[in-house]
Length: 245
Image (cartoon, rainbow, N blue to C red):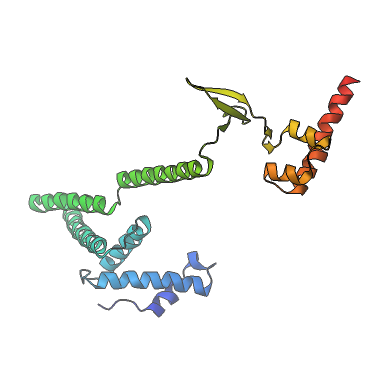
């Protein structure tokens, strides 16, 4: 039995309702993938009719979308899994036909073969990471890996810093080192989350330091210094004077 051609798969997909909104290029990509899958199944020649081919195609699509199968060893395991599932499918179909008869007889031998086959299927699925347990473990490991990466990156960028953010109010404060533990202290170089220091801006206001020197101290542009001076320091100063009056 010959496998469908790439063009025949494209034509079939174009006529399906779920692909009506797809462009010709998108359908071509999907068709290419399905054609490659059909070629993989033909490699083992274990499908004897259209029904079995459709059964294996559906399984292959599901497994390839659920797990990353790249190595030749994993592909061989996948084909072994498909073959084993097909054998179980054949046995189960035969047993169902027998059970539907007027005087059904239970084939103990085939029932035992089905049980062993299902155990083999489960083992192969676990090997390929296709079970729920594998997926949960893989998700947990991926999450932990991402958190570790972020922690190391943060440490590399902020090693030696003692400014932290309060988890309750989200404000920054500074931790001062002593011999016993860490003591919280006011974050004097921040106003909320804005880089700022009132004593330095007072010195700048009194013209005892230049705007270029302020920009160098804060590591920002002169435009930023002037913006903070006009919109933060002077407004705070005005508020204090109004309060005194």
